[in-house]
Image 1 (cartoon, rainbow, N blue to C red):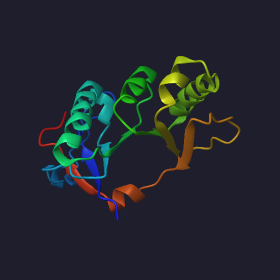
Image 2: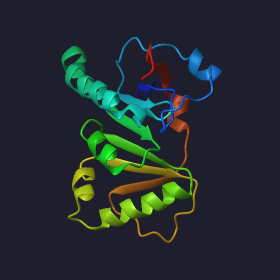
Image 3: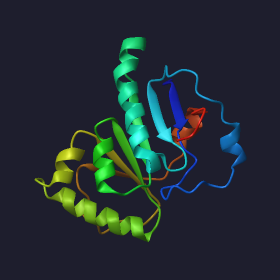
Length: 171
């Protein structure tokens, strides 16, 4: 069985507001090692401090192969739909999992999807090297989906199989 880590990096949402103190987040142990085949960046909205997450993942990608002899696959779970941020994060992750949770997300998804359908767009160029999964429980039938997206229903399967750890101090 794969060794998987859910790494909680923030307890803030995309508007940088703290979530109410969730006992579950407080009880998650602090991460002490990164010997995992998959590292899932989660927690609040991890890209609310995307610069810090980018720097952390750059270091993980550079140092873990030297320390442990392998590079884990990096997954980022986000609900943030700012194309510039998502494009930046494609440089440091293997899989980007984007959540569609409301009507505004769906509108933004439709526009990004339309841009991706244009093979020569900037967005298409940046996303072609990263697997992008769109998780949703919304009805997206009738949308001509770009071949760069993989669409699936929300699932907590990875969370059930993974070790959950958090940073000692959230971003």
